[in-house]
Length: 297
Image (tube, rainbow, N blue to C red; front, side, top):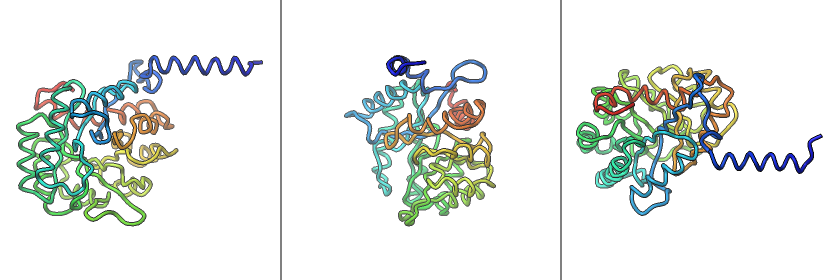
């Protein structure tokens, strides 16, 4: 019979190993026997310690290293303001540019735009993506719902150089904030722009509804960040959409890497599906722009 003391000692030993090599604790092995390459589609600098974008990015990388995350897709800078002015949009994009230029081997940038300022947004797209290092659009948050006509020009730019759009969505019990998009809005925009790959960020939060809303629109993927880890969420997404349409993101610093990784790593799905969700699908979406820019993918 195993004594209580022996059992406690074994737990303590396991805990020490986890702290010494945390990547092996939280990462999952691939079917080929190697390590799964984890890419996080949804990262911000707000609520992260540090006085500068470079300091905050360094902190994110330290945290990412503890759970085995290879790449971060960064957007919005410090902002949690859902109604930014053009000056704020540019300032936050500048913060992201500083962060990714300091750590080009660990992070990519995603440009922060707003359909409330369509002409400015196209100029900012050209500055940050066409003429700069950024590789996607979004997370686009509130301001105007993403089904408005002003989003069409932004989507056309995305289609022209084959990069994805990450769109914030929510389905709030008490009603969404003014201008806040839902999965229905993403579907409507995607139907107007079938050449663009969209990521339905948060899958509306109410994931059981969100998954069903986007199910028939093949160019829309579900990103499962931002809501609490819940048994069955990833299993349902894979069952209804296929593993190729589910994307891991954390929404740090509003959420932790570990809590959001746990949704996928703890899901009752094949390892091959976990590999796609944890990084393979995001790499596939970004491959055209990464190749065009000469980046390693």
